[in-house]
Length: 107
Image 1 (cartoon, helix red, strand yellow):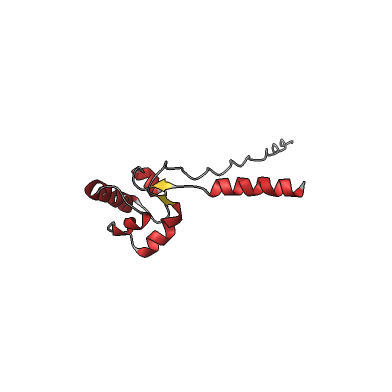
Image 2: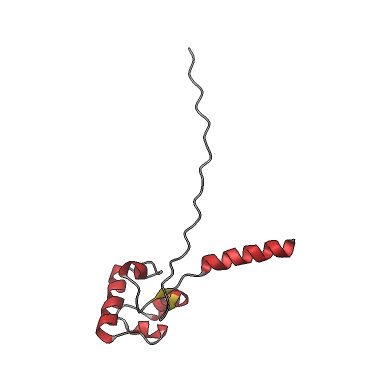
């Protein structure tokens, strides 16, 4: 029983961690969702892609103006050059506990 529970937990955790951004087809919004990539860098990636064509490897993103080694290190595990862009799983909604009504004031 413990093994089954552990397997289910591991499967759930691994599913949450998988988020991939295809740098050859991602939209500006999808690129901006990457850590360290704001609107300017996202636009630079799109502009580079239009001017030079598709990226042949994720390392090629370092050729984009504004993408240095530190930025690349932050995002490399989230990048792909093929396949569909899959956004990170949304955090589960937290239900608010109902609050007790305030007692009515009496005279």
